[in-house]
Amino acid sequence: MILSNISVPLLGLVDTAVIGHLSSAYYLAGIALGSGSIAILFWLASFLRMSTTGVIAQAFGAKDFVRVKQLLLSSLFLSLIFSVTLIALSPVLMSSIEALSGTSPQVMLQANSYFSIRIMSAPAALSNLVLLGLMLGMHYGKGPFYLVLFTNIVNIVLDVVFVVVLDFGVAGAAWASVIADYSALVLAVCLVKKLFARHGVSWGGSLPSKESIAGLLTLNRDIFIRSLLLQLCFSFMTFYGARLGETILAANAVLLNFLMLVSFALDGIAYAAEAKVGAAKGEGDVQQLHLWVKVSVWWGSIFAIGYCVFFAIFGSAIIGLLTNIPDVINTAKLYLPWLIVLPIIAMACFLFDGVFVGLTRAKEMRNSMFIALMVGFFVPFYLTMEWGNHGLWFAMSCFMATRGLTLVYRYKKIFDQGALLQ
Image 1 (tube, rainbow, N blue to C red):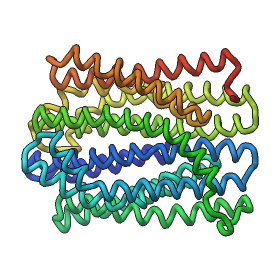
Image 2 (image 1 turned 90 degrees about the vertical axis):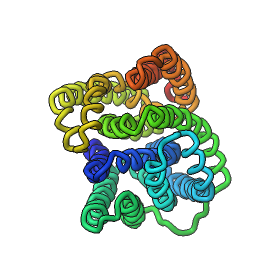
Image 3 (image 1 turned 135 degrees about the vertical axis):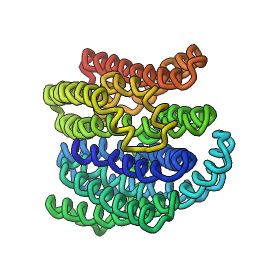
Image 4 (image 1 turned 120 degrees about the vertical axis):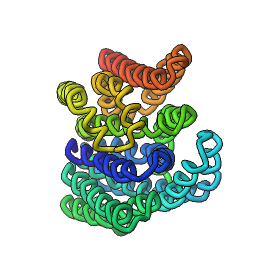
C-alpha cells in the first residue's frame, strides 16, 4: 500500500514538471487551478472509498461474503449517481471557480481547458475509488498497487506524448488523465473478478439492496461532510493563493506536490490500518485492533521523520526539477521550510483517519475536521493574514496538527471506555 500510494504523487510531479517547463508561469498556474479544482471534487468523493473499505473490512473479518457483494454493488450505485451529478453541474462549478479565484484571463483559460476535459473521467475515477476500497477491505494489497501503478504509467506516458511531443499543452495533460482513468477501470474490474473468484463469490444474481444503500448513505453523510470541510481548507489555500498573484499560485502548486508525496505515503499505512482495524472489529478482537493502531503509529513516525530529513536535503533540488521559471523557483524556496516540518506535524491526522475509517466511526471524523477547520485553520490564518503566503502555510500546519490531536484524544477516550467494538 505504501508503494502504490507513493506512485500517486509521482504523477502530479510529472504533470507539474511537464507544464512547468513551458514558456510562461500562467500555464503552470492554470493547471494548478484546473487540476486543483478537479482534485478537490474527486477527493470530496473519497467518502466512497473510505466507507467501502470500512464496511467491507468488517464484513470480510466476519466472513460474510454475501454482504461484501451487496456493499460493493451499493457503493458502485452511489458512485455513479455522484459522478453524473458532478458532470451535470460542471458549468456551474467552473463559473464558481472563476469568480472565487479572481485570477488573470490567461490563467483562467488554461484552467477551464483542463477542467472541462478532466471532469469527463468522473464515472471511471469514482468507480475506481469504490473498487480500490473493496480491495483494501479484503486485504488484497497487491491489487491497489497494480491499479495505481498502471494508472500512473499510462498517464505519465500520455503526458509526455500529448504535451511534449504533440504540443497539446494543458489540454493534453487533461486527456492523458481521462484515458488513464478509464483504462484503470477496465483493469480494476478484472482484478476484482479475480479476487471474488478466489473467495468463491460470483458477480451475478444480485442488485444493490435498499438496506445496504441506506446504511452506506448514513455512513457516507458524515464522511462526506468531513471531506467537504477538508476540501474547503484546500480550496481556500488555492483560491487565496491565486489572489496573491500567479507566481504565488504557481509556487504553491509546486510545494503542494511535497504535501501530496507525504500524504499518499502516510495514507499507505493508514489504508492498511483501515483494513486491519476493520477486520479486527469484525472478528471482535480488541487486543488485535489496538495492536494494529500502535504498529501504524510506529511506522508512520518513521516515515514522517524520513520525509523531514529528505525535504531538508533535497527540497531545493526537487523544486528545480519541477520548474525552470526563476520567479517560481525563488518563491517556492522561500516557503520550503513549512514543507520540511509538515510531515511530522501531519502524521497523526493521516494515520488516525485510517483507524476511524476501520472502526466506521464517521461522526468522530466529521467533528474532528470541523474543529480543525474552524479553530485550527481559520483562526490562525486570521491572526497571521499580514504574513501573506507564510500565514497561509502556518494555518495549514495548525490545521493538520489540530486534526491529529483531536482524533488521538477521541481514540484514547473510546479505548479507555472499552467501546472500540461498538
